[in-house]
Image 1 (cartoon, rainbow, N blue to C red):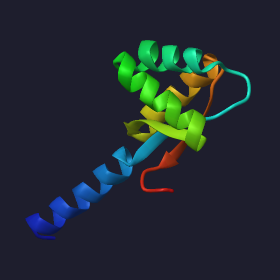
Image 2 (image 1 turned 90 degrees about the vertical axis):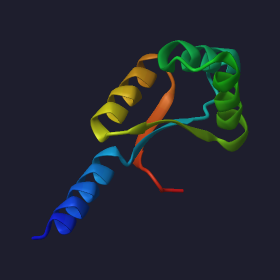
Image 3 (image 1 turned 60 degrees about the horizontal axis):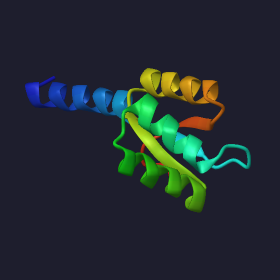
Length: 95
């Protein structure tokens, strides 16, 4: 295996490990202000960004709130469940 082939193989593994997303879904229970609060406090988003993501959840039914390795995304999902939000993990690039 050449250095170029080894580099490509390593990039493919890294892409798989970092190609995951945390998706928060709309629900009929939580107030929009609460969802913004969770995004602001847990993820550390600026208030404007937290509200933008909350509105995406509200109007489009879902929003990607984080991307990275699968394990980290699963931890975010567990945290969102702890806040009472509906969240899932998916591979990046999934519609």
